[in-house]
Length: 326
Image (cartoon, rainbow, N blue to C red; front, side):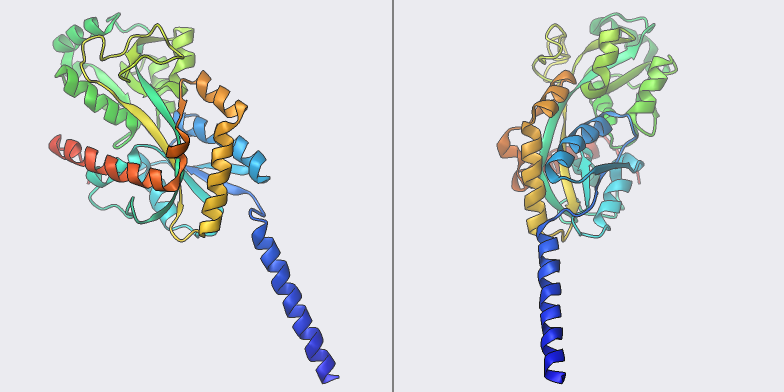
């Protein structure tokens, strides 16, 4: 009886091991969380939800978008850095991943070493907008108006380190004028304030602004990229209107907690590449003026090299401007 019992026990253990191995091979087994560091309804959130819908189809599990706002994305980044590396938590972030080291002295994460890198997603141009009844009608009029009004003009942004804040800072440098900046908990509420004529100016991504530009509910001064964009072919760039070499766009990458198994990262990266080829996602991004990155940039290695280069680029710029939060 003892021998038979031992054989049955061994068989049971073997079957259990096989079953758990099979379950692991079938990743994912339940919904995956995609954390967004900015407010629901904002431009990064729009990208995340559009991408999540396609990833969910490919991975055959729902992608649940969770918004964790605060401190220019560093609250969410610290949360991810301390999350369980089980393959069920990922993070979509933009340029703020690279500017955080220069802006925040006491970061609770290391952008280059606290995460597993998955790949880049899209580039998004930005647009310079004003409330609909703001007096200047074009960029040259705006520049002249700012010389007269200066800090009486207020500029909304999504807080320190947000791309709207970076774009606004570059704008002030380019025209040689300081505005009064008003931070919000995201560009979605900042846009609401602009539409409500509670603030004067906002620099924001086309993923949020194109519907308002088309509806003429805001005053539109131009795009921030060096070249015109296909979604707004008649819209002049800030560069061609006199702000020479003004070129700023938003890039987005996906990350996971450090220690997430390599096979999981590889599978998620494969799903990402497939999602970026889907007609639904391409159409949605094109409608919002966003550009899907090249296949080469969709790799984990490429994203990490890019973040490293952006840290080195923005660190001196931000430090020279004395821009820091703590």
